[in-house]
Amino acid sequence: MISATLADHPARAEAARDAALDQRIVASTETKRNMGSFFRAVETACLRRSDDPAVIFCSRDHETSALAYRSMTFTSLLRRSDTFAEQLVRLGIRPKSTVAFSVHPTSGYAELLFALFRIGSVPVFIDATMDLSGMSACMSECAPTHLIGDSHFVNHYMKHRGSLSAVEGIIEVSSREDDVVLRFERPEPLAVEAGLPPDSGFEEEDPLCIFYTTGSTGIPKGVVWTNEILLQHLRIQEKLYGSGDDHIDLVTFPFFMLTALAQGRTCVLPPVDFSSPAAFDPSVLVEVMNTTRATYCFASPVVWHNIIDFCRRRGTRIPGLRYTTSAGATVPLKTVRGLVDVAPNAKVCVPFGATEAILPISTIDAVEICEETWQETDAGKGICLGRPVPGLTVSVIPIVDHPISTLDEATVLNAGQVGELIVKGPTVTTRYHRRPEATRRAKIHETLPDGRVDVWHRLGDAGYIDSKGRVWYCGRITFGIEVDGAWYFPDQVEAVFNAALDVYRTAATTFERDGSTAIALAVQKEREGACSNDVIYAKIIDISKKYGFPIEAVYFYDDAFPVDPRHNVKIERDRIRQHISRTSGTAVRDHRLFVMTRCAGERDKTKGPIL
Image (cartoon, rainbow, N blue to C red; front, side, top):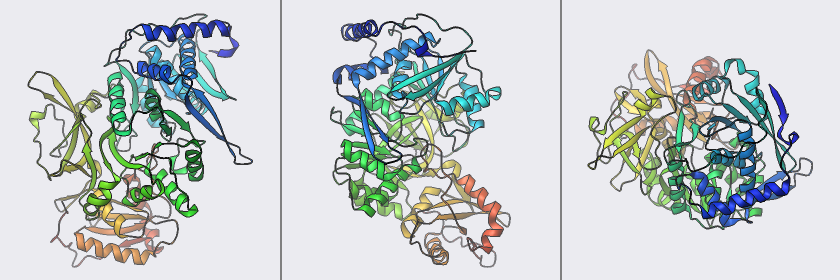
Protein backbone atom coordinates (compact mmCIF):
# COMPACT_ATOMS: atom_id res chain seq x y z
CA MET A 1 0.00 0.00 0.00
CA ILE A 2 1.17 3.52 -0.77
CA SER A 3 0.67 6.01 2.02
CA ALA A 4 1.13 9.74 1.60
CA THR A 5 -0.44 13.14 2.04
CA LEU A 6 -1.95 14.82 -0.99
CA ALA A 7 -0.04 18.00 -0.16
CA ASP A 8 3.21 16.07 -0.67
CA HIS A 9 2.56 15.63 -4.39
CA PRO A 10 3.32 18.21 -7.12
CA ALA A 11 0.33 20.37 -7.91
CA ARG A 12 -0.38 23.12 -10.37
CA ALA A 13 0.47 26.64 -9.37
CA GLU A 14 -2.12 28.24 -7.13
CA ALA A 15 -2.89 31.03 -9.59
CA ALA A 16 -3.33 28.65 -12.50
CA ARG A 17 -5.60 26.42 -10.46
CA ASP A 18 -7.74 29.34 -9.36
CA ALA A 19 -7.99 30.54 -12.96
CA ALA A 20 -9.17 27.10 -14.07
CA LEU A 21 -11.73 26.98 -11.31
CA ASP A 22 -12.95 30.46 -12.22
CA GLN A 23 -13.38 29.35 -15.81
CA ARG A 24 -15.40 26.35 -14.72
CA ILE A 25 -17.63 28.50 -12.49
CA VAL A 26 -18.26 31.00 -15.30
CA ALA A 27 -18.91 28.20 -17.79
CA SER A 28 -21.48 26.64 -15.51
CA THR A 29 -23.67 29.73 -15.80
CA GLU A 30 -23.51 29.64 -19.59
CA THR A 31 -23.92 25.92 -20.21
CA LYS A 32 -27.17 24.30 -19.16
CA ARG A 33 -26.57 21.32 -16.93
CA ASN A 34 -29.00 18.54 -16.15
CA MET A 35 -31.42 20.04 -13.64
CA GLY A 36 -31.73 16.63 -11.98
CA SER A 37 -28.33 17.05 -10.32
CA PHE A 38 -28.36 17.91 -6.63
CA PHE A 39 -24.89 19.38 -7.11
CA ARG A 40 -26.43 21.80 -9.60
CA ALA A 41 -28.58 23.20 -6.79
CA VAL A 42 -25.49 23.52 -4.61
CA GLU A 43 -23.56 25.30 -7.33
CA THR A 44 -26.44 27.67 -8.08
CA ALA A 45 -26.68 28.64 -4.40
CA CYS A 46 -22.91 29.18 -4.18
CA LEU A 47 -22.87 31.40 -7.26
CA ARG A 48 -25.82 33.43 -5.99
CA ARG A 49 -24.43 34.04 -2.53
CA SER A 50 -20.72 34.10 -3.52
CA ASP A 51 -18.98 36.12 -0.77
CA ASP A 52 -21.59 35.56 1.93
CA PRO A 53 -20.67 33.12 4.73
CA ALA A 54 -21.65 29.54 3.90
CA VAL A 55 -20.34 27.90 7.07
CA ILE A 56 -19.49 29.50 10.40
CA PHE A 57 -17.18 27.31 12.45
CA CYS A 58 -17.22 27.74 16.20
CA SER A 59 -14.40 26.49 18.42
CA ARG A 60 -13.97 26.51 22.17
CA ASP A 61 -10.78 27.32 24.07
CA HIS A 62 -10.35 24.47 26.54
CA GLU A 63 -8.57 26.70 29.08
CA THR A 64 -10.73 29.82 29.01
CA SER A 65 -13.94 28.24 27.58
CA ALA A 66 -14.18 31.29 25.29
CA LEU A 67 -15.83 30.73 21.92
CA ALA A 68 -14.13 31.79 18.67
CA TYR A 69 -15.64 31.99 15.20
CA ARG A 70 -14.33 31.76 11.64
CA SER A 71 -16.25 31.46 8.39
CA MET A 72 -16.01 30.05 4.87
CA THR A 73 -17.78 31.82 2.00
CA PHE A 74 -19.98 30.14 -0.59
CA THR A 75 -17.33 30.84 -3.25
CA SER A 76 -14.69 29.13 -1.10
CA LEU A 77 -17.05 26.21 -0.50
CA LEU A 78 -17.49 25.68 -4.23
CA ARG A 79 -13.78 26.06 -5.00
CA ARG A 80 -12.77 23.68 -2.24
CA SER A 81 -15.35 21.16 -3.45
CA ASP A 82 -13.92 21.28 -6.97
CA THR A 83 -10.38 20.98 -5.62
CA PHE A 84 -11.33 17.95 -3.53
CA ALA A 85 -13.15 16.45 -6.52
CA GLU A 86 -9.95 16.67 -8.60
CA GLN A 87 -7.93 15.07 -5.80
CA LEU A 88 -10.46 12.27 -5.29
CA VAL A 89 -10.47 11.48 -9.02
CA ARG A 90 -6.67 11.17 -8.85
CA LEU A 91 -7.21 8.66 -6.06
CA GLY A 92 -9.35 6.51 -8.34
CA ILE A 93 -12.88 7.60 -7.41
CA ARG A 94 -15.10 7.63 -10.49
CA PRO A 95 -18.77 8.22 -11.37
CA LYS A 96 -20.97 5.61 -9.65
CA SER A 97 -18.12 4.55 -7.32
CA THR A 98 -19.54 3.60 -3.92
CA VAL A 99 -17.67 5.39 -1.12
CA ALA A 100 -18.08 4.61 2.60
CA PHE A 101 -18.17 8.00 4.33
CA SER A 102 -17.84 9.03 7.98
CA VAL A 103 -16.29 12.47 8.53
CA HIS A 104 -16.66 15.01 11.34
CA PRO A 105 -18.70 18.04 10.18
CA THR A 106 -15.84 20.45 10.87
CA SER A 107 -13.29 18.44 8.84
CA GLY A 108 -14.39 19.17 5.31
CA TYR A 109 -17.67 17.27 5.59
CA ALA A 110 -19.68 19.45 3.21
CA GLU A 111 -16.86 20.10 0.73
CA LEU A 112 -16.00 16.39 0.46
CA LEU A 113 -19.60 15.33 0.00
CA PHE A 114 -20.20 18.00 -2.61
CA ALA A 115 -17.01 16.80 -4.33
CA LEU A 116 -18.38 13.24 -4.42
CA PHE A 117 -21.69 14.54 -5.79
CA ARG A 118 -19.72 16.56 -8.37
CA ILE A 119 -17.92 13.42 -9.53
CA GLY A 120 -21.11 11.40 -9.58
CA SER A 121 -19.94 8.83 -7.03
CA VAL A 122 -22.30 7.53 -4.35
CA PRO A 123 -21.36 8.21 -0.70
CA VAL A 124 -22.63 5.69 1.84
CA PHE A 125 -23.20 7.29 5.24
CA ILE A 126 -21.84 5.14 8.05
CA ASP A 127 -22.75 6.20 11.59
CA ALA A 128 -19.64 6.71 13.71
CA THR A 129 -21.57 5.12 16.60
CA MET A 130 -22.37 1.92 14.69
CA ASP A 131 -21.10 -1.24 16.37
CA LEU A 132 -18.80 -3.72 14.64
CA SER A 133 -21.57 -6.12 13.62
CA GLY A 134 -23.62 -3.29 12.12
CA MET A 135 -20.61 -1.79 10.35
CA SER A 136 -19.59 -5.21 9.02
CA ALA A 137 -23.09 -5.78 7.63
CA CYS A 138 -23.19 -2.35 6.01
CA MET A 139 -19.71 -2.58 4.51
CA SER A 140 -20.31 -6.06 3.14
CA GLU A 141 -23.62 -5.01 1.66
CA CYS A 142 -22.56 -1.76 -0.02
CA ALA A 143 -19.10 -3.10 -1.03
CA PRO A 144 -17.47 0.36 -1.29
CA THR A 145 -14.51 0.92 -3.58
CA HIS A 146 -13.12 3.60 -1.24
CA LEU A 147 -13.39 4.68 2.35
CA ILE A 148 -13.27 8.32 3.45
CA GLY A 149 -13.26 8.99 7.16
CA ASP A 150 -11.73 10.65 10.16
CA SER A 151 -9.12 8.85 12.26
CA HIS A 152 -11.73 7.14 14.46
CA PHE A 153 -13.49 5.58 11.48
CA VAL A 154 -10.28 4.67 9.65
CA ASN A 155 -8.70 3.13 12.76
CA HIS A 156 -11.88 1.16 13.43
CA TYR A 157 -11.80 -0.14 9.87
CA MET A 158 -8.08 -0.97 9.97
CA LYS A 159 -8.48 -2.81 13.29
CA HIS A 160 -11.25 -5.02 11.93
CA ARG A 161 -10.42 -5.00 8.22
CA GLY A 162 -10.15 -8.78 8.21
CA SER A 163 -13.87 -9.06 8.88
CA LEU A 164 -14.93 -6.07 6.76
CA SER A 165 -15.28 -5.63 3.01
CA ALA A 166 -11.96 -4.77 1.34
CA VAL A 167 -11.60 -1.38 -0.36
CA GLU A 168 -9.31 -0.09 -3.10
CA GLY A 169 -8.34 3.09 -1.29
CA ILE A 170 -8.51 4.52 2.22
CA ILE A 171 -8.60 8.29 2.65
CA GLU A 172 -8.14 9.66 6.16
CA VAL A 173 -9.39 13.18 6.77
CA SER A 174 -7.94 15.46 9.43
CA SER A 175 -8.02 19.18 10.24
CA ARG A 176 -4.88 21.28 10.44
CA GLU A 177 -5.55 24.85 11.56
CA ASP A 178 -8.03 26.17 8.97
CA ASP A 179 -7.28 23.52 6.35
CA VAL A 180 -8.25 19.91 5.71
CA VAL A 181 -5.62 17.26 5.01
CA LEU A 182 -6.30 14.03 3.10
CA ARG A 183 -3.98 11.09 3.76
CA PHE A 184 -4.46 8.03 1.59
CA GLU A 185 -3.61 4.38 1.22
CA ARG A 186 -4.08 2.58 -2.08
CA PRO A 187 -2.41 -0.34 -3.87
CA GLU A 188 -1.44 1.68 -6.96
CA PRO A 189 0.49 4.94 -7.45
CA LEU A 190 -1.44 8.19 -7.45
CA ALA A 191 -2.50 9.44 -10.89
CA VAL A 192 -0.47 12.55 -11.79
CA GLU A 193 -3.31 14.19 -13.67
CA ALA A 194 -6.96 13.25 -13.91
CA GLY A 195 -9.62 15.63 -15.10
CA LEU A 196 -13.08 15.86 -13.62
CA PRO A 197 -15.67 13.78 -15.48
CA PRO A 198 -18.36 15.65 -17.42
CA ASP A 199 -21.45 16.23 -15.34
CA SER A 200 -23.97 15.75 -18.15
CA GLY A 201 -24.63 12.15 -17.17
CA PHE A 202 -26.62 12.79 -14.01
CA GLU A 203 -30.16 11.46 -14.08
CA GLU A 204 -32.91 12.31 -11.63
CA GLU A 205 -33.30 8.68 -10.57
CA ASP A 206 -29.58 8.00 -10.23
CA PRO A 207 -28.56 7.23 -6.64
CA LEU A 208 -27.18 10.33 -4.97
CA CYS A 209 -26.26 8.68 -1.68
CA ILE A 210 -27.11 5.75 0.57
CA PHE A 211 -28.19 6.42 4.13
CA TYR A 212 -28.43 3.55 6.60
CA THR A 213 -31.29 3.26 9.07
CA THR A 214 -30.40 3.15 12.77
CA GLY A 215 -31.23 -0.54 13.00
CA SER A 216 -33.28 0.08 16.15
CA THR A 217 -35.81 -2.55 15.02
CA GLY A 218 -33.43 -4.88 13.18
CA ILE A 219 -30.34 -4.91 10.98
CA PRO A 220 -29.59 -1.46 9.49
CA LYS A 221 -30.84 -1.14 5.91
CA GLY A 222 -29.31 1.05 3.21
CA VAL A 223 -31.87 3.56 1.92
CA VAL A 224 -31.22 4.84 -1.60
CA TRP A 225 -31.76 8.59 -1.95
CA THR A 226 -31.82 9.86 -5.53
CA ASN A 227 -31.06 13.29 -6.93
CA GLU A 228 -34.78 13.88 -7.47
CA ILE A 229 -35.70 12.96 -3.88
CA LEU A 230 -33.24 15.50 -2.47
CA LEU A 231 -34.37 18.19 -4.91
CA GLN A 232 -38.00 17.60 -3.93
CA HIS A 233 -36.94 17.75 -0.28
CA LEU A 234 -35.41 21.18 -0.93
CA ARG A 235 -38.66 22.45 -2.42
CA ILE A 236 -40.72 21.22 0.54
CA GLN A 237 -38.29 22.73 3.05
CA GLU A 238 -38.45 26.09 1.29
CA LYS A 239 -42.26 26.08 1.35
CA LEU A 240 -42.38 25.22 5.05
CA TYR A 241 -39.50 27.27 6.46
CA GLY A 242 -38.78 29.95 3.87
CA SER A 243 -36.04 30.41 1.30
CA GLY A 244 -34.58 33.80 2.20
CA ASP A 245 -30.82 34.23 2.06
CA ASP A 246 -30.91 35.73 5.54
CA HIS A 247 -31.57 32.35 7.14
CA ILE A 248 -28.88 31.11 9.53
CA ASP A 249 -29.14 27.43 10.57
CA LEU A 250 -27.59 26.02 13.72
CA VAL A 251 -26.53 22.50 12.75
CA THR A 252 -27.04 19.61 15.16
CA PHE A 253 -27.67 16.85 12.58
CA PRO A 254 -24.85 17.05 9.99
CA PHE A 255 -26.67 15.79 6.89
CA PHE A 256 -29.21 18.62 7.03
CA MET A 257 -26.29 21.02 6.53
CA LEU A 258 -26.05 19.79 2.94
CA THR A 259 -29.65 20.62 2.08
CA ALA A 260 -29.42 23.97 3.92
CA LEU A 261 -26.33 24.97 1.90
CA ALA A 262 -28.07 23.88 -1.31
CA GLN A 263 -30.78 26.40 -0.42
CA GLY A 264 -28.19 29.13 0.12
CA ARG A 265 -28.59 29.19 3.90
CA THR A 266 -25.67 29.94 6.19
CA CYS A 267 -24.83 27.05 8.52
CA VAL A 268 -23.32 27.33 11.99
CA LEU A 269 -21.31 24.40 13.38
CA PRO A 270 -21.13 24.46 17.20
CA PRO A 271 -18.21 22.85 19.06
CA VAL A 272 -19.95 19.59 20.00
CA ASP A 273 -19.53 15.85 19.51
CA PHE A 274 -22.19 15.34 16.84
CA SER A 275 -22.33 11.60 17.57
CA SER A 276 -23.70 12.21 21.09
CA PRO A 277 -26.64 14.66 21.02
CA ALA A 278 -27.58 13.96 24.64
CA ALA A 279 -24.13 15.22 25.70
CA PHE A 280 -24.33 18.56 23.86
CA ASP A 281 -23.57 21.42 26.25
CA PRO A 282 -26.77 23.52 26.23
CA SER A 283 -24.95 26.62 27.46
CA VAL A 284 -22.69 26.51 24.40
CA LEU A 285 -25.58 25.96 21.99
CA VAL A 286 -27.54 28.89 23.45
CA GLU A 287 -24.50 31.18 23.33
CA VAL A 288 -23.72 30.20 19.73
CA MET A 289 -27.33 30.71 18.61
CA ASN A 290 -27.55 34.14 20.23
CA THR A 291 -24.10 35.26 19.01
CA THR A 292 -24.63 34.20 15.40
CA ARG A 293 -28.32 35.24 15.46
CA ALA A 294 -29.41 31.81 14.26
CA THR A 295 -32.90 31.83 12.75
CA TYR A 296 -33.50 28.08 12.42
CA CYS A 297 -32.55 24.99 14.40
CA PHE A 298 -33.48 21.33 14.06
CA ALA A 299 -32.53 19.22 17.07
CA SER A 300 -33.34 15.94 18.74
CA PRO A 301 -35.97 16.20 21.53
CA VAL A 302 -33.28 15.44 24.13
CA VAL A 303 -31.20 18.42 22.91
CA TRP A 304 -34.19 20.75 23.19
CA HIS A 305 -35.03 19.33 26.63
CA ASN A 306 -31.56 20.22 27.88
CA ILE A 307 -31.65 23.68 26.26
CA ILE A 308 -35.04 24.46 27.80
CA ASP A 309 -33.84 23.33 31.22
CA PHE A 310 -30.72 25.52 30.92
CA CYS A 311 -32.64 28.60 29.73
CA ARG A 312 -35.15 28.34 32.55
CA ARG A 313 -32.48 27.93 35.18
CA ARG A 314 -30.50 30.89 33.81
CA GLY A 315 -33.47 33.07 32.93
CA THR A 316 -32.34 33.44 29.32
CA ARG A 317 -34.01 33.06 25.93
CA ILE A 318 -33.17 32.66 22.24
CA PRO A 319 -35.05 35.55 20.58
CA GLY A 320 -33.46 35.30 17.13
CA LEU A 321 -34.95 31.91 16.25
CA ARG A 322 -37.78 32.03 13.71
CA TYR A 323 -38.28 28.28 13.35
CA THR A 324 -37.51 25.34 15.62
CA THR A 325 -38.07 21.73 14.60
CA SER A 326 -37.56 18.44 16.39
CA ALA A 327 -37.84 14.78 15.40
CA GLY A 328 -36.24 11.39 15.97
CA ALA A 329 -38.88 10.29 18.48
CA THR A 330 -42.12 11.65 19.86
CA VAL A 331 -41.76 15.17 21.24
CA PRO A 332 -43.36 15.59 24.70
CA LEU A 333 -45.89 18.36 25.29
CA LYS A 334 -43.65 19.88 27.98
CA THR A 335 -40.86 20.21 25.38
CA VAL A 336 -43.20 21.90 22.91
CA ARG A 337 -44.39 24.34 25.59
CA GLY A 338 -40.83 24.89 26.72
CA LEU A 339 -39.76 25.85 23.20
CA VAL A 340 -42.60 28.34 22.96
CA ASP A 341 -41.27 29.89 26.15
CA VAL A 342 -37.51 30.02 25.41
CA ALA A 343 -37.85 30.84 21.68
CA PRO A 344 -40.65 33.42 21.87
CA ASN A 345 -40.32 34.61 18.26
CA ALA A 346 -40.13 31.16 16.67
CA LYS A 347 -42.70 29.00 14.99
CA VAL A 348 -42.32 25.70 16.84
CA CYS A 349 -42.85 22.80 14.43
CA VAL A 350 -42.84 19.04 14.99
CA PRO A 351 -42.31 17.25 11.65
CA PHE A 352 -42.63 13.51 11.14
CA GLY A 353 -40.42 11.54 8.80
CA ALA A 354 -38.39 8.40 8.22
CA THR A 355 -35.12 7.51 6.57
CA GLU A 356 -37.18 5.95 3.77
CA ALA A 357 -39.37 9.04 3.43
CA ILE A 358 -37.09 11.98 4.11
CA LEU A 359 -38.36 14.51 6.64
CA PRO A 360 -41.06 15.76 6.61
CA ILE A 361 -43.98 13.46 5.79
CA SER A 362 -46.32 15.56 7.90
CA THR A 363 -45.96 18.45 10.32
CA ILE A 364 -47.80 20.13 13.16
CA ASP A 365 -47.04 23.35 15.03
CA ALA A 366 -47.14 24.25 18.71
CA VAL A 367 -50.36 26.24 18.40
CA GLU A 368 -52.33 23.24 17.18
CA ILE A 369 -50.70 20.92 19.71
CA CYS A 370 -51.30 23.19 22.70
CA GLU A 371 -54.80 24.29 21.72
CA GLU A 372 -56.25 21.13 20.19
CA THR A 373 -54.44 17.81 20.32
CA TRP A 374 -52.62 17.47 23.64
CA GLN A 375 -55.76 16.53 25.57
CA GLU A 376 -56.29 13.57 23.24
CA THR A 377 -52.64 12.53 23.61
CA ASP A 378 -52.83 12.69 27.40
CA ALA A 379 -55.97 10.54 27.26
CA GLY A 380 -54.14 7.82 25.35
CA LYS A 381 -55.37 8.56 21.85
CA GLY A 382 -51.85 8.68 20.42
CA ILE A 383 -49.59 11.50 19.28
CA CYS A 384 -50.82 13.85 16.56
CA LEU A 385 -48.31 14.23 13.73
CA GLY A 386 -50.28 16.86 11.85
CA ARG A 387 -51.32 16.87 8.21
CA PRO A 388 -49.25 15.45 5.32
CA VAL A 389 -47.16 18.11 3.58
CA PRO A 390 -48.22 19.08 0.03
CA GLY A 391 -47.39 16.35 -2.46
CA LEU A 392 -47.37 13.48 0.03
CA THR A 393 -50.26 11.12 0.80
CA VAL A 394 -50.64 9.08 3.98
CA SER A 395 -53.09 6.17 4.30
CA VAL A 396 -53.74 3.38 6.79
CA ILE A 397 -53.98 -0.35 6.04
CA PRO A 398 -54.59 -3.35 8.33
CA ILE A 399 -51.55 -4.59 10.24
CA VAL A 400 -50.23 -7.78 8.63
CA ASP A 401 -46.89 -9.55 8.82
CA HIS A 402 -46.40 -10.39 5.16
CA PRO A 403 -45.47 -8.56 1.95
CA ILE A 404 -48.12 -6.63 0.03
CA SER A 405 -47.25 -6.37 -3.66
CA THR A 406 -50.00 -4.03 -4.82
CA LEU A 407 -52.42 -1.69 -3.11
CA ASP A 408 -55.29 -3.80 -4.47
CA GLU A 409 -54.22 -6.52 -2.03
CA ALA A 410 -54.84 -4.26 0.98
CA THR A 411 -57.87 -2.49 2.40
CA VAL A 412 -57.47 1.23 3.01
CA LEU A 413 -59.00 1.86 6.44
CA ASN A 414 -61.44 4.62 7.27
CA ALA A 415 -60.82 7.61 9.54
CA GLY A 416 -60.26 6.61 13.16
CA GLN A 417 -59.32 3.00 12.40
CA VAL A 418 -55.90 1.95 13.70
CA GLY A 419 -53.55 0.17 11.32
CA GLU A 420 -50.17 0.53 9.65
CA LEU A 421 -49.29 3.97 8.26
CA ILE A 422 -48.16 4.02 4.62
CA VAL A 423 -46.94 6.98 2.59
CA LYS A 424 -46.29 7.89 -1.03
CA GLY A 425 -44.92 11.01 -2.68
CA PRO A 426 -41.87 12.57 -4.35
CA THR A 427 -39.62 12.23 -1.29
CA VAL A 428 -40.44 8.56 -0.67
CA THR A 429 -37.70 6.09 -1.59
CA THR A 430 -38.45 3.10 -3.79
CA ARG A 431 -35.92 0.51 -2.62
CA TYR A 432 -33.25 -0.59 -0.17
CA HIS A 433 -29.69 -1.08 -1.40
CA ARG A 434 -29.10 -4.74 -2.31
CA ARG A 435 -31.91 -5.90 -0.01
CA PRO A 436 -34.61 -7.24 -2.37
CA GLU A 437 -36.52 -9.08 0.35
CA ALA A 438 -36.57 -6.04 2.63
CA THR A 439 -37.75 -3.95 -0.35
CA ARG A 440 -40.48 -6.48 -1.11
CA ARG A 441 -41.76 -6.36 2.48
CA ALA A 442 -41.66 -2.56 2.74
CA LYS A 443 -42.98 -1.36 -0.63
CA ILE A 444 -46.47 -1.45 -2.17
CA HIS A 445 -47.09 -0.63 -5.83
CA GLU A 446 -50.17 1.20 -7.05
CA THR A 447 -51.03 1.41 -10.75
CA LEU A 448 -52.76 4.69 -11.55
CA PRO A 449 -55.44 5.18 -14.23
CA ASP A 450 -52.90 6.73 -16.61
CA GLY A 451 -50.61 3.72 -16.30
CA ARG A 452 -48.02 5.32 -14.01
CA VAL A 453 -46.98 3.34 -10.94
CA ASP A 454 -46.68 4.94 -7.51
CA VAL A 455 -44.66 3.31 -4.74
CA TRP A 456 -46.01 3.36 -1.18
CA HIS A 457 -43.68 2.81 1.77
CA ARG A 458 -44.88 0.85 4.80
CA LEU A 459 -43.65 2.87 7.76
CA GLY A 460 -43.91 0.10 10.34
CA ASP A 461 -45.81 2.51 12.59
CA ALA A 462 -49.27 1.95 14.04
CA GLY A 463 -51.60 4.91 13.75
CA TYR A 464 -54.72 6.36 12.23
CA ILE A 465 -56.08 9.41 10.42
CA ASP A 466 -58.72 11.53 12.11
CA SER A 467 -61.75 13.23 10.60
CA LYS A 468 -59.70 16.39 9.96
CA GLY A 469 -57.10 14.55 7.88
CA ARG A 470 -54.46 14.60 10.61
CA VAL A 471 -52.11 11.66 11.12
CA TRP A 472 -51.92 10.10 14.60
CA TYR A 473 -49.11 7.87 15.85
CA CYS A 474 -49.55 5.07 18.39
CA GLY A 475 -46.14 3.37 18.31
CA ARG A 476 -43.86 1.05 16.38
CA ILE A 477 -45.73 -2.09 15.35
CA THR A 478 -42.79 -4.30 16.31
CA PHE A 479 -43.08 -3.02 19.91
CA GLY A 480 -46.84 -3.55 20.12
CA ILE A 481 -47.93 -5.71 23.04
CA GLU A 482 -50.83 -8.18 22.73
CA VAL A 483 -52.62 -8.97 25.99
CA ASP A 484 -55.80 -11.06 26.06
CA GLY A 485 -56.40 -10.43 22.36
CA ALA A 486 -56.06 -6.64 22.64
CA TRP A 487 -53.13 -4.59 21.31
CA TYR A 488 -51.36 -1.82 23.20
CA PHE A 489 -48.79 0.38 21.49
CA PRO A 490 -45.99 1.89 23.60
CA ASP A 491 -46.14 5.60 22.70
CA GLN A 492 -49.91 5.64 23.11
CA VAL A 493 -49.64 4.12 26.61
CA GLU A 494 -46.57 6.05 27.71
CA ALA A 495 -48.09 9.42 26.83
CA VAL A 496 -50.77 8.92 29.51
CA PHE A 497 -48.22 8.27 32.26
CA ASN A 498 -45.76 10.92 31.04
CA ALA A 499 -48.51 13.53 31.40
CA ALA A 500 -49.77 12.40 34.79
CA LEU A 501 -46.54 11.57 36.63
CA ASP A 502 -43.74 13.77 37.93
CA VAL A 503 -41.12 11.85 35.94
CA TYR A 504 -38.91 12.48 32.89
CA ARG A 505 -40.46 9.67 30.84
CA THR A 506 -41.74 6.10 30.87
CA ALA A 507 -41.32 3.07 28.62
CA ALA A 508 -43.80 0.25 28.12
CA THR A 509 -42.43 -3.19 27.37
CA THR A 510 -43.39 -6.83 27.88
CA PHE A 511 -43.22 -8.72 31.15
CA GLU A 512 -43.55 -12.50 31.29
CA ARG A 513 -45.47 -13.72 34.31
CA ASP A 514 -46.91 -17.16 35.02
CA GLY A 515 -46.59 -18.10 31.38
CA SER A 516 -48.52 -15.11 30.03
CA THR A 517 -47.59 -11.69 28.71
CA ALA A 518 -48.27 -8.47 30.59
CA ILE A 519 -47.01 -4.89 30.32
CA ALA A 520 -44.11 -3.65 32.41
CA LEU A 521 -43.73 0.10 32.77
CA ALA A 522 -40.17 1.37 33.19
CA VAL A 523 -39.77 4.80 34.78
CA GLN A 524 -36.95 7.30 34.27
CA LYS A 525 -37.27 9.94 36.97
CA GLU A 526 -36.36 13.59 36.64
CA ARG A 527 -32.86 14.56 37.71
CA GLU A 528 -34.08 16.41 40.77
CA GLY A 529 -37.16 16.72 42.93
CA ALA A 530 -39.01 13.59 41.81
CA CYS A 531 -41.50 11.85 44.11
CA SER A 532 -40.54 8.65 45.91
CA ASN A 533 -40.88 5.33 44.11
CA ASP A 534 -43.79 4.34 46.38
CA VAL A 535 -45.78 7.49 45.57
CA ILE A 536 -45.21 7.12 41.81
CA TYR A 537 -46.10 3.43 41.97
CA ALA A 538 -49.41 4.21 43.70
CA LYS A 539 -50.27 6.73 40.96
CA ILE A 540 -49.43 4.19 38.27
CA ILE A 541 -51.86 1.71 39.83
CA ASP A 542 -54.64 4.31 39.79
CA ILE A 543 -53.95 5.34 36.17
CA SER A 544 -53.78 1.71 35.02
CA LYS A 545 -57.20 1.01 36.53
CA LYS A 546 -58.69 4.17 35.04
CA TYR A 547 -57.57 3.40 31.49
CA GLY A 548 -57.65 -0.39 31.62
CA PHE A 549 -53.94 -0.88 31.00
CA PRO A 550 -52.85 -4.43 31.97
CA ILE A 551 -49.66 -3.23 33.66
CA GLU A 552 -48.36 -5.77 36.16
CA ALA A 553 -44.85 -4.51 36.90
CA VAL A 554 -43.21 -1.12 37.44
CA TYR A 555 -39.44 -0.78 37.20
CA PHE A 556 -37.54 2.33 38.30
CA TYR A 557 -34.42 2.89 36.24
CA ASP A 558 -31.31 4.02 38.10
CA ASP A 559 -29.91 5.69 35.02
CA ALA A 560 -31.16 7.05 31.70
CA PHE A 561 -33.03 4.71 29.37
CA PRO A 562 -30.97 3.05 26.63
CA VAL A 563 -31.57 5.01 23.43
CA ASP A 564 -30.65 4.94 19.74
CA PRO A 565 -27.15 6.13 18.80
CA ARG A 566 -28.25 8.65 16.14
CA HIS A 567 -30.67 10.94 17.99
CA ASN A 568 -30.09 9.69 21.56
CA VAL A 569 -33.85 9.78 22.22
CA LYS A 570 -35.56 6.76 20.63
CA ILE A 571 -36.08 4.31 23.50
CA GLU A 572 -34.63 0.84 22.95
CA ARG A 573 -37.40 -1.13 24.61
CA ASP A 574 -35.91 -4.57 23.97
CA ARG A 575 -32.87 -3.65 26.03
CA ILE A 576 -35.15 -2.41 28.83
CA ARG A 577 -37.09 -5.69 28.74
CA GLN A 578 -33.86 -7.69 28.93
CA HIS A 579 -32.57 -5.49 31.77
CA ILE A 580 -35.75 -5.97 33.81
CA SER A 581 -35.60 -9.74 33.31
CA ARG A 582 -31.91 -9.87 34.24
CA THR A 583 -32.13 -7.75 37.41
CA SER A 584 -35.63 -8.49 38.68
CA GLY A 585 -34.56 -10.33 41.82
CA THR A 586 -32.24 -7.59 43.06
CA ALA A 587 -34.62 -4.85 41.98
CA VAL A 588 -37.46 -6.18 44.14
CA ARG A 589 -35.23 -6.14 47.20
CA ASP A 590 -33.99 -2.61 46.37
CA HIS A 591 -37.52 -1.29 45.94
CA ARG A 592 -36.94 -0.59 42.25
CA LEU A 593 -39.28 -3.27 40.89
CA PHE A 594 -42.90 -3.47 41.98
CA VAL A 595 -45.03 -6.42 40.85
CA MET A 596 -48.77 -5.91 41.12
CA THR A 597 -50.97 -8.46 42.84
CA ARG A 598 -53.63 -10.17 40.77
CA CYS A 599 -57.06 -10.79 42.24
CA ALA A 600 -57.61 -14.55 42.26
CA GLY A 601 -54.95 -14.86 39.59
CA GLU A 602 -57.02 -13.03 36.99
CA ARG A 603 -56.73 -9.68 35.28
CA ASP A 604 -59.56 -7.18 35.09
CA LYS A 605 -60.76 -7.74 31.52
CA THR A 606 -63.65 -5.28 31.72
CA LYS A 607 -61.56 -2.64 29.97
CA GLY A 608 -59.55 -2.94 26.81
CA PRO A 609 -57.30 -0.68 24.77
CA ILE A 610 -58.33 2.93 24.44
CA LEU A 611 -58.45 2.87 20.65
